[in-house]
Length: 177
Image 1 (cartoon, rainbow, N blue to C red):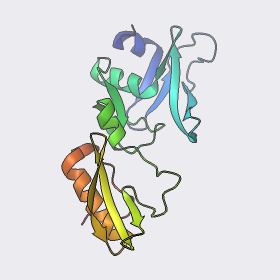
Image 2: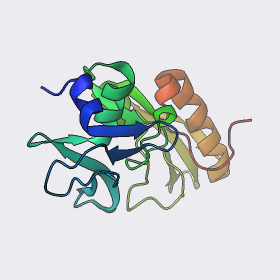
Image 3: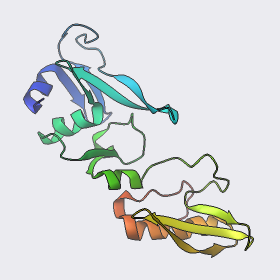
Image 4: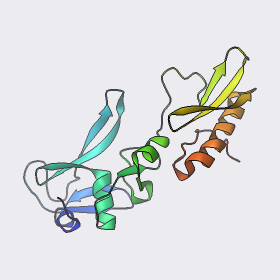
C-alpha cells in the first residue's frame, strides 16, 4: 500500500494547479522534473473526458487519490469527487471525499436524448409544458410543470440543493438567484 511518505519521495504535488512532477527518475516514463501521469478516458460513453493516472511502484493510481493522500496523509476511505466534474482538474480546492452515491449526484453532462439543454428537465407532450424532475434513491420525483425550460431548471436545481446538498449538480445557466 502506498504511503504519504513514499508518495512524497517520488512526486511533488502542486495543490494550486493540481499537477504532479517527478521528484526523481524511477525508470520508464518517470523523468526527474517532468509532469507525472497520463490521461485515461472515462470509458467508451465519454471518449472526450479524462482522469489522470500515475504509476508508482508497479501500481497505477488516479491523480485525485494521490492528491488526497498527499494533502491528508491518508488514502481515501471512499471516492474522491471533482467538484466541477472535470476529472483532469486535480487542484486541491476542486477535490473532496465522497461516497459513490454523492459522487454520482454531481455527474456532469446531459443524456444524449436530452432536448431541453438542462439536467432534470424534459418536455411533457401531453401537457405541452416543461416538466422538472429529480432522481432520489433511484426514484424519479416529479417537481412540476412549467412554461419554460429555464423555470423548470430553476425548480430542479432548488430541489437538488435540498436533497443533495453540496453534491447537487446545478444546471449551467444562472438559475439560482
